[in-house]
Amino acid sequence: MSIFGWLYTICFAICYLPQIIKSLKLKKVDDISISLFSLSLIGYISALTYTIGELGFNIILITNYVFGGLCSLIMIIIYYVYKK
Image (cartoon, rainbow, N blue to C red):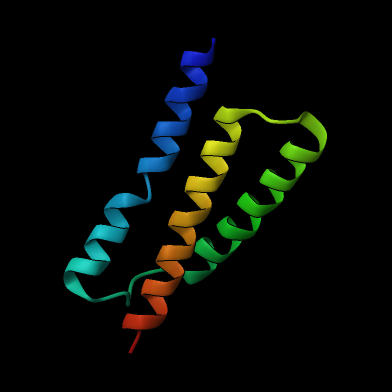
């Protein structure tokens, strides 16, 4: 069953990459919803805290939350660097 855990982790992890790459390439973020990435970052931090506190060390969940949180944070930074 862990194959499904890794599969969803990989899918959620790479789903942010096209937007990050596009924003960096075009240096344009006019069509980005910053609230999506801000809420995602808060959600990932909360989920990571909950997982460690209640479920213990689960490498699949922790990998998902850390990578997703980093991608959200990167997109937030990109947004504020390139917004007009």
